[in-house]
Each structure stands twice: as structure tokens, then as C-alpha cells.
Length: 138
Image (cartoon, rainbow, N blue to C red; front, side):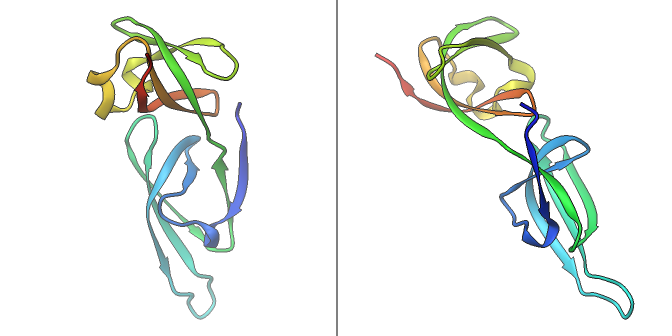
């Protein structure tokens, strides 16, 4: 938990992930300005938060290093659904944990969740989000 690494800004690409204000975000767009007479090239990074969906942007020199979250993509099974949480069981370790529906479930699949279904969830920086359905269990 809380794993992150450092990557040079010039190595980042759209679709990858970055930490902006300690929030894991998916990079939507990178714009690089050319270096000036006495300056270095700057990159403007626009990204969308994984957990909150907010658009964030930062401007950094391309030679600077930024934090990149390490995201674990795992499979879990929905054990129970309450109005506020989804109880998941990890399919490898069989650990049980609760995921808040408000912030921990992808908007596109909220209505499709039901007990017994396998889902893919992402775990990063001590937070969990259910991202997609894996199919129904028999």
C-alpha cells in the first residue's frame, strides 16, 4: 500500500498514471512547449482523478521527476451489497473488505453490481475502486 515510483516527465504518455496533489490520476493530455533561449522545455499535464473524476493539471520541466502510483489490478467477488458499501472477497487471498459505493465503484457499472459476480478492482495508495465486471460466477 502507498507504493509509488518516480518517473521523468518526458517519459510520461497519455493513458498512463500520475500523482497530482496526492491523488492518482489518468493522464488525458500532455502538451510540451519548446525551450526558450535560457529556459528548459515545459510540459503541461492534464489528468483525471481515478477516484473523484476531477480534472487536474500541472506544469513541470520535462527534466523533472514526478510521482507515479503503482496500481495493483486484482479480481474479487462481490459477497454482499448494502446501500452504502460493497463487500468484496479477493480471489487470491480470500480477504474480505468493504468498498464505499460513492467513491469506490466505477459509475458505468454501479447498476450492474450483484452478489456473486466477479469484478476487477484496482488498489493503490491504500484505496480501492471497482473498475469493471469480469463475468458471472456459477
